[in-house]
Length: 172
Image (tube, rainbow, N blue to C red; front, side):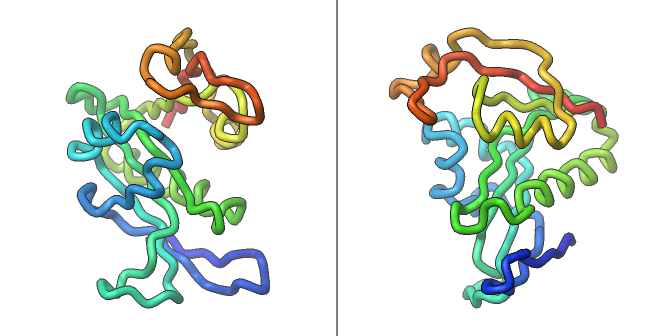
């Protein structure tokens, strides 16, 4: 289990990372990273999930309030090559190292399983692309018009429509 604290002194609440049953994954967080409920419903049941939980906030389960989620799976039964399907941190908790900690935790767990590569698909610009590149992911290919073909509603960020998906790879 990973543990950390927010750097902002006015919010000293601690958080930790645990495994999570995919059926318990929080829809509001999942839809931050992938606005297609239908797509998420298809990949979520067969996924491996990790959760960042706020330990200072009581919940009936005693595990802490969910503030981040990381969803991974091996494509088509592949064991050495996995894909990061969804990764989101509650907006109030972003920019506090939670996303990086979630991904580092997932990478450690994947290495224990013998996984050699982790792939992620993201827009061709924006904060998500920078996040993955800072963590060592490198562009492996471009899926032209992915967002136009696969989403019924246009996806916009900072006044620019997402059209192409970049596929990024991290060697583990």
